[in-house]
Length: 368
Image (cartoon, rainbow, N blue to C red; front, top):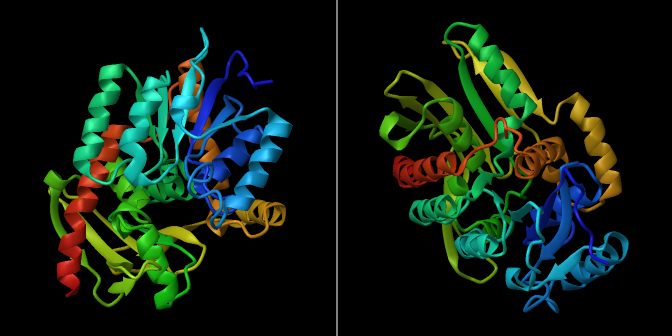
């Protein structure tokens, strides 16, 4: 028995499930299996690592248990590669959700197009470099495939509320703050630097950069000045589990001014906790407004999810409603042609990555 999508559903191939409780792909799967995204029917999971070289390693046993349970309960078919996925049936709208390693995305997107996908949901940042992402954009356009990005903060409640408040006051300055829950020691950060070796601005803070590109006219050509907050920021060189050294920001804060007269700030801290937020301040730096994620309404949902999935990454729970919104809008666009309101396009993603590549050496130099 193979599960089949309903009349108004996209047939979804999840590419890159990762380890249960740890991988973002796993959480995408859990949401779709729980029918949280009515327009998405998860039919295939492609997992090259845990169905291949990683089967006996850390996480392999947990993945095998998840596979067994999911096959039995939901009739989802597990494949080692996209090439193993059966040909798309007539009349079915097929969508790939690519949630693998960033370095694999250019190849995986080509394979997803070959597997008959008409829509691709690409996890941020899309590709390791601007050049690769531009090539993917061209490949998608040539194949007539819609490529949309998993920049979930574009649809976040706290972002919308802060933008609306800032628009209601004169000279309100917005700062987007992103925090994570790594331990503030060399071992924890070294592991983080190695696993996210594209660097903080292409990884953790890429969501904030996408907001700047989407809503604040930020592009490499339109940046007038960039100023790091040296007191807050920190850049370190640390050894990862492999013994190789990596240089990255463990925390960074900066303000961008554009040639068109806009100013906006970003603050990101790998060890800052599990609350992300945005503020509006006046010209004297006095805080006028703040909205956090999770807020009080979200916290009740976080508690429920934490009890349901003990040991899972805490950030899954605080961003749970936004992950659902993005998947549902992308799947709705694939299955029914509905407008994917607020969802970042691959054009936004290309400029976001360009800004990340531009800022990284600039900010590192300011912190020397």
